[in-house]
Length: 462
Figure 1 (cartoon, rainbow, N blue to C red):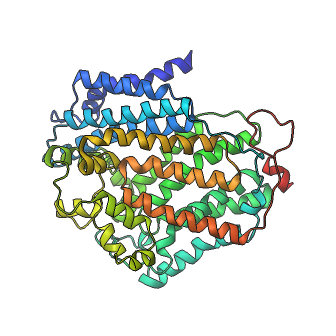
Figure 2 (cartoon, one colour):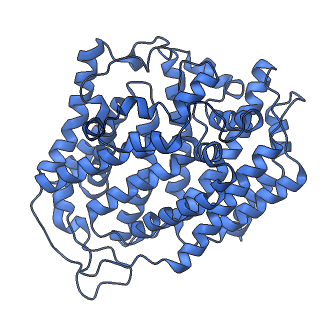
Figure 3 (spheres, helix red, strand yellow):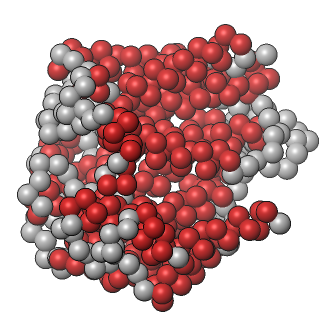
């Protein structure tokens, strides 16, 4: 009974979102949506509720949540400045039209495209992932990263107590900084150690995770840390399945809460602000949802295909391809990436910072209304990743798909160049794994329960 009531909460929140915002921001100038649009948002959420794969549902509902945070950000800025007066109706309808197409695609592909369990059974490579030269390299890399950052700029920005936001994108952080995304794997391996080890090794992995969170955040940027938190969801769920524990949505909710806290705290620390004062006045300075605000403003101001210098394909290709390979072809990687939305929008806004508006905005301004079928294409690949997370081939395969899952999750408020730029790093990690691990082929035991992911890693450790 309580569970059914709880399921109604998102529908009530979306339907009465104007009233909620008016309660939080009593300015009388809030951006609002019509009742018809509120009903439409509820219908889109209803579609998300029909998804069978839990990971598909997390992404779909997370993308809907992005609208909620964006609307709150718009009203927060209005309360603080009294300047922004955005008309959100058309942009929000189009946003949910695209999200609806994405979710409809997920529903179709869940039924038509099935990712089968590995033909030869689950490859239990836990020791290769967590107890090998590969894992030692992954544990060591973040330490080397923070050392090279300190050597390159002479201090650790997050500990400076100063506002370094104007300079944070201009620092030369050292030779390893371009591979900072590798820290996602360090985080997930330490998380596995925390979940499966006992006594001393478990405590050491917990201490390492705390240190790693600081290292990842030391430059004041939140992306990699947020990827770690979301990627931890499928890894945690898999470990519960491996231990035959009951799955619950508690860790998922906790992850979203942690994402919000991290987003706020890092935003405060990198500006050198007083934490207690900033939290007290948080309603006037919401740090999340700004991407949706910029999407709405762009939707109302610019026309698709007419933004000077914007080229989705070239920027995506530049982010994905190796710089040496591009040089052979006569291209400059940096120049190609600058065709991306973050750079082009920063010129439109006359800003020193990259402006992110999310994948829907990027595709809309590149291909106009053709963005709708493209959302279905994204749904196809999203479903493949989600289904493989339900039936991973191995522990390393789980980590790879968990990382992809997190990258897809943050496409909605990120930028395609970052997504494509992370894929080569994932490929490098794959090569390092193959190079530093011995081949192992322990298969799932015969007669195991249906859906069992393989031999519990705990058996390898005890």
